[in-house]
Length: 196
Image (cartoon, rainbow, N blue to C red; front, top):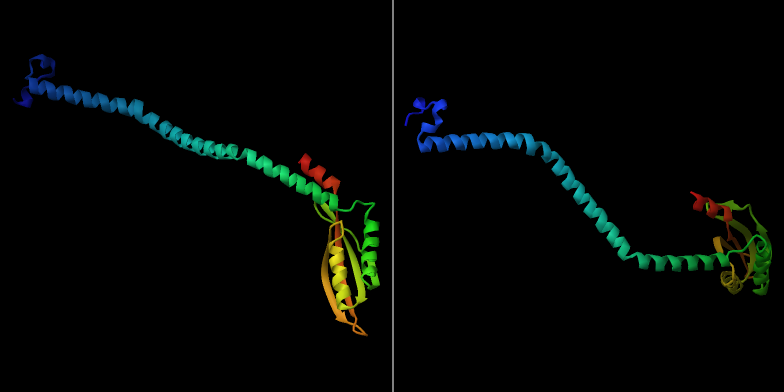
C-alpha cells in the first residue's frame, strides 16, 4: 500500500488498515478539539471548586468540634459568671469605701499598731474598675505587723497590699509603709463593652 496512491475522495475503496488508521487519526483530532474546547476551559473551575470544597470541609470540622464542646463551654461560662459575681460581691460599693478605711484602722489598732498615716490617694480609673489606693504607715513589732497584714487579707472585701517598706525604729519597733488597694467595679465600663 502506497500512501501517495490514496485519494480522499475514494475513502471507501481504501484498504482496511488505511481506513482504520484514518479513522483513528480523525478520532484523535476530534478528541483533542473536544478536550481543548470543553474540558480544559472547565479545569480551572474544577480546581477552584475542589479548593473551595477543602476549605468548607475545614470550616465544617472546626464548627463541628465547637458544637461538640458547646455544652462544656456553656458550663464553664456559667461557672465563670458565678465566680465573677462572687468577686463583685467582695468589691466595696461607693458607700462602703469609707467603712473599709475604718475596718483597716480597726484591724491595725486591734493588732497593737500605732498609725502614723492612713489616707486615701487619688483613684486610678482602669477599663472595668476603679483602683482605690490607701497609703498606710504604722509602727509596731514584728508580730504585730504580721498580724495586721494577715487580718487585712482576711477582710470580707478585696484588699491587696503593695510597696512594702519596713525600717527599724526605736525600742525594737518597726515602721512599715505600704499601700493598700481596693477596687470598685465601674458599671459604665461593662455597659460600654456590651454595646460594642
